[in-house]
Amino acid sequence: MDIAIVLALAASVCTATSSVCQRKGALATPAQGFDPWLVFRLARRPVWLLGVGSMIAGFLLQLAALRRGALALVQPILAAELLLVFGYLALAGSGRVRVRRRDWVSAAAMSAGIGLFLFLASPSGGRAHATGPLWLLASLATVGAVLVALVVARAPGRRAGPSRSRRAAALGAATGISWGLVAAIIKELSSELGSGIGAVFSAWPVYALIGVGAATMLLASHALAAGPLAASQPGFTVLDPLSASLLGVFLFGEHVQTGAADLAGEVTALAIVIAGATALSRSCLIRETAEDPSRSPSGCQPVARPAEVADGLLATGQAVTVGAPTE
Image (cartoon, rainbow, N blue to C red):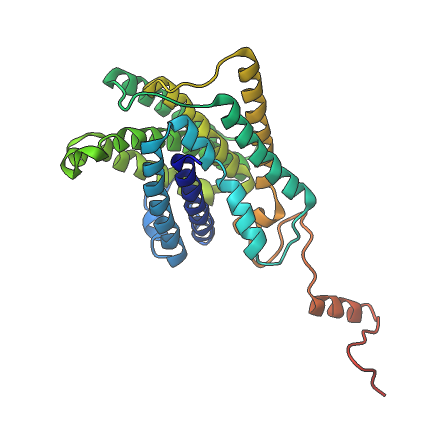
């Protein structure tokens, strides 16, 4: 197996851990409107700091993967984050809600879609650096798309203000698009690693990464705190690899298969990933991490524990026999 694929999978594990931890921190620290100090308030929570540590580990693995593989290859693999989050919660979950069959089907569909896209696109090649004019165009296009998403997030709805779901979805889309640009900057930075530490800090990508990465982290924090995970996660999961793949082709001249049959298959694969990610983000198990942990998410069937079953039967006047009968 290509080392870039192995490194990308390892990065996915770290980002999935980061996502779970940061969601828990954001749940306990809601934001009222745009709060530039939200990150500093979140930093007081150990679980959020653990998430940041996992995110840094994921970044280093992603950097190593992008140094060895194409942007259009590495970023779609990172879309497996949602699948890994689901698997993590299913194995170590809280036990308050049941995992439905459709959740497993959605997870399998998403995995199949990612695999099919990579197989058909076969991304490869590309140059190590992009020219200044290309970077300017790519940056302007990304900023424009993010601003549109932010306008949608703040636009008033039928009620007094934007709904929580629409705000979370728009902020999630803005975050996903921004992460795509971050991945492209990381790809540019990775080409400087062979020249020594001095070359890394004398080049522009490391400083652009700090600025764009900090802004994207702020966007992600607001998206996680704005509303339900089911609304924000598809933007994270789908638009990140999609925008990164487009930037890989535009900036670095990476090659993907563009025959009629290949394009039809790639569009179909992306549609499968989008459908799987959307359905999986609505899983009761994943929604539980973004809602009140004291109760099951709406429409989700809680797992009945033996003591709760006994209490329920006693409340309806039915006898419960445990162990040997008593006289």
